[in-house]
Image (cartoon, rainbow, N blue to C red; front, side, top):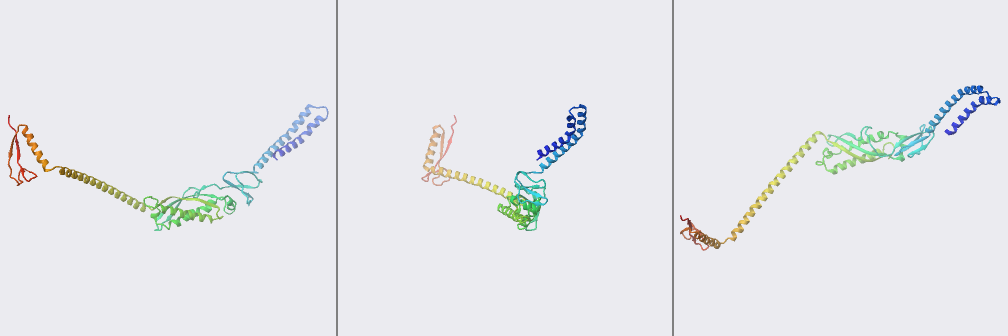
Length: 341
């Protein structure tokens, strides 16, 4: 269309500029001065015609561009003609349209909820079952159902996130947290059963899904997942939990010390039992006959060295001095005396 219009404009310009020149040539006697004058006279019309052509080409190009619509990937296009919205959405890509039709792109990809457009975590001030203040951080992922995009545009608008999602993201967690004691909400692994945390998160997730699905266009916004980022209890509870953890650590330390002491006592007891068993074994192996034999060997050994042996008699059977034999008789006391040289 642009090409045809340009050709027509050029043809009209040529038709308007040719007559003066043709008159000069049709006389048969070509006068160069008259031809030059005709061309100069026609230059004003050429200038005007060139401007008209330029403006026309630019206008046609702009008009052609308004007839092309581009829908980005992950979006659908809504066709709005002076408030009259077409029920058919445009898929990603290039599309031809009437110049007066506006195409609005609506994102249908997975998106992070932005609380009031500033943060991806909704910070919520709530009260526990005991009336204690608790700060909770909630995050969520969602997407727009492409089949409901036209209805959302008609009844809610482009800024559907703040209209549909924001209120449930703040109201539902407050209602859920009010059912629980603050000690069940605290996110410390040492003090909170993981099943409590999972149950609370699941209840908040279900509540937000149901609430969002019933606002505006039913089931138009799909909540994919809700996360509890953090639960911040009051400072008094933090202090008491810290104190409790310190006490538990002290108890564990004392228990360890007791176990070490018990292990050491067991070691010493085992060592004493071993010594006692050894002594019993040795004493069982020494008989009275062996003692008497060793006594005689000692006498022989002392006498063999040339030493004088004084044998002091002892009372038999009294056991006051000497060595008692197996027959009840006491051996005399041996007093070796070293002879002087």
